[in-house]
Amino acid sequence: MKIKNIKTLGELKKAGYKSKSIKDELRDNLIVKIKSKTTAFEGVHGYENTVIPELERAILSRHNINFLGLRGQAKTRLARLMLNLLDEYIPVVEGSEINDDPLLPISRFATELIAEKGNDTPIIWLHRSDRFAEKLATPDVTVADIIGDVDPIKAANLKLSYADDRVIHYGMIPRANRCIFVINELPDLQARIQVALFNILQEGDIQIRGFKLRLPLDIQFVFTANPEDYTNRGSIVTPLKDRIGSQILTHYPTDIETAKTITQQEAKSDIRQKQNIHVPELAKDLLEQIVFEARESDFIDEKSGVSARLSITAFENLLSTAELRTLKNDEETTTVRLSDFLGIIPAITGKVELVYEGEQEGAAQVAYNLIGEAVKTLFPEFFPKIEKLKKQEEESPYDDIVSWFFNYSEGFELLDSLRDKEYKALLDAVSPLDDLLGKHQPKLTKQESYFVKEFVLWALVEYKQLSKYRFTEGIQFKDPYGSFISGL
Image 1 (cartoon, helix red, strand yellow):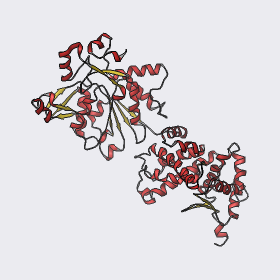
Image 2 (cartoon, rainbow, N blue to C red):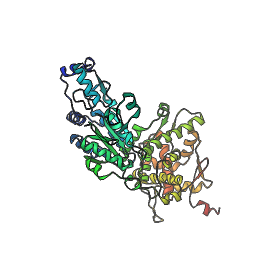
Image 3 (cartoon, one colour):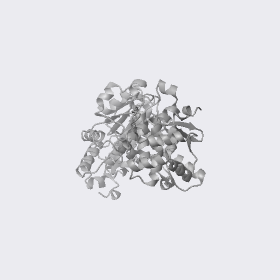
Image 4 (cartoon, helix red, strand yellow):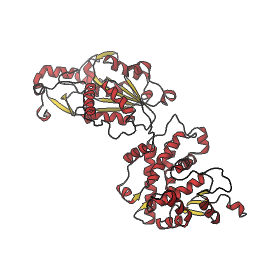
């Protein structure tokens, strides 16, 4: 259908256009996507076998939908991606405030205009990108904002009674007729507003200032809610919950590979950072493991959740930490170091809600400890497990490294500001590290090996084989018992 040539109601009828509800649009276009084996929800990862099939069933059932999940679980993104399932263009009566369908008008303005002009009624075409409305539910939201109110200025100008429906100033929901309308954090919406909502969902009418207006709106409602809100701030009133067809539970990524994919997709980094800063795969794994550790930490509120945005902002901070070092050292390129992970602490502290014990520990210390826990968790995947207790005569693959630090009594310091050449020379000086990597990670590139060397040192600290001290300019590694034996 060549929409550019269709500008009146008569031309629309002649072209054979048939009206379709928004729920039917979504359903029909989803069926086409499924049959053609193309995804309707591009860029959402980890939901292929859980959330997306449930969402597809809800759309096929023509349901209004509630996404229930913790923060950072792509609830709003899924709602926005539903736009891809709408028809590219739909006809609208020109001048209509509520996107009236020329073949099925519902407003007084549209019906009177069509009655007056008939087939000459002008129409415009609305693109699907303009068919999305979103509102964050807050306690100060009013019925006037959502539904509408009587406009006294309009009544005075038109010399009409307040009881006349032409004096109504429509709110967000009527203006979203034939659109997807999203209400985020639904439990925060006042109960009386929620009651007004379920009247629209069930009866198709709106009530403003004492008079009832029959307005069968055609809207795909999508709500989002956080389980924490049900106890802390509010709840969804039972009649409204009863009228929401499908409630879909969202979740965080269940594996590191999926989490990495999301982070790399969402992180906003400068092109120069991408070109000049190399990030080892182990560093990417470690970043995601930190988030997994946070979700399991006793110091962090489990009910509040740990958003996927933590790993995204942390990755951005990680690149910026390495970039800052190159700028100060006047270097062109560098590789991320494990000590650069100290630069992501502000991203962690701003994204987690601590329980009482966590507050006592301190947000920065909790974040610092999460890095160590992540190192400890990942280490056995790359190197032999370090036994906590071993017999004196038993040899460990880490004995030579520990002995090296025992003999290096003044301490081994890795300063944050070291130039790449100096940093590599220091790690190369710990010769047992080369032997360990050559035996257990022989395929490592030279570029990646330095991150892994530092990774080994951090892991030995976590397993109490070495000690680590953080000072203003960097980190010092030492044998944990050397100072006692030397009498210091």
